Image (cartoon, rainbow, N blue to C red; front, side, top):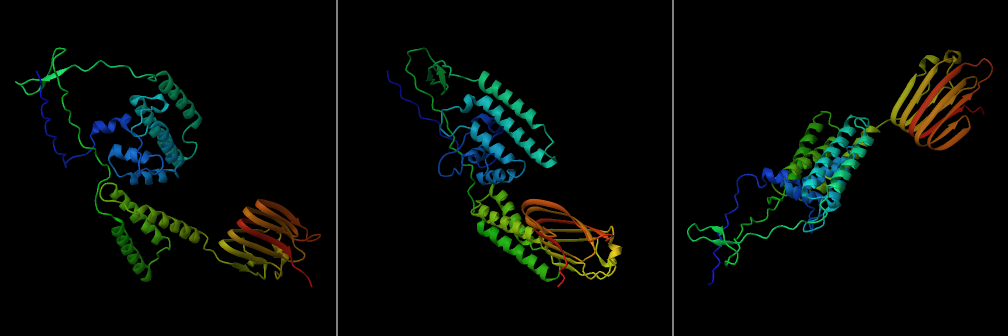
Length: 394
């Protein structure tokens, strides 16, 4: 007797409503694997995680890069996921972990990355890292070694089924009865990247509109910092990257955002060191400033024409700059005690005593003669030169 295999039931059409990933699938962390193929950028971690949560991998790649600068959380998360997650189609179990234990390990990765983020936010003493490392090693030993599935356990053969004409379903039958394998429904694979319009030119138009508005406000006389322009582009690109994770494609927005971030950094540094040259040539002790400060430029303090040197006795002058040069010219008959330091690359020349290098400091006392008034000078630079000398007499 021959049995004709029944026709497979028609596959239900995919629904366009509701989430494409169920809550149970999200909770099953053991099913995550690293992607392979042309869409893989480094190790496939972002692609695999994006497929699991059903978002565009671009948003997770950007998140990993951003979290690198917050306590190294991005490096910790990506590196450990690279170690724990298998590649698509691979039968190898990383570290010998089964799906259940791998899911537990991934939860631990999330906790560890979150602690790194909080530690960077609240200070390096927020969390006892040595204790965390010891606990992590113990957990790895228990989960990865003692509880390891060393071999796949054989399963019982499937129970034979045959078509029941009365019900139209499949029922268990006795061994030896001609049977067919019930067809199973396999839903079509989901593509986590939502296909939609390319957002690049729309983002560029939105950024150009914002820059035009800022320019109009700037020309109207309102205070607009130079860094506001690249900051606006960075903000627009970031917002559109988030939108592109759910609708549309990001296109080249990551590159544009990185370029705008670089310009923003340069503009911020430029504003930070937007200093000026300061020159003081006092004629009396009362006109000698107690402190002079600039971000970038030269500070020149010429004391050679001070008429009442005795009034300078015990006075202290603080001179500080981030990048530039500090010069002090001292008249005859004035003793000076100098404390000078350059934090970065620089040069010191204090009354003929010269030093150069990185992170240099020196204390020098210049004797102006018996009974001479004494002035205290504290000079500091981040990068540059400090020069203090006595006036030359021709």
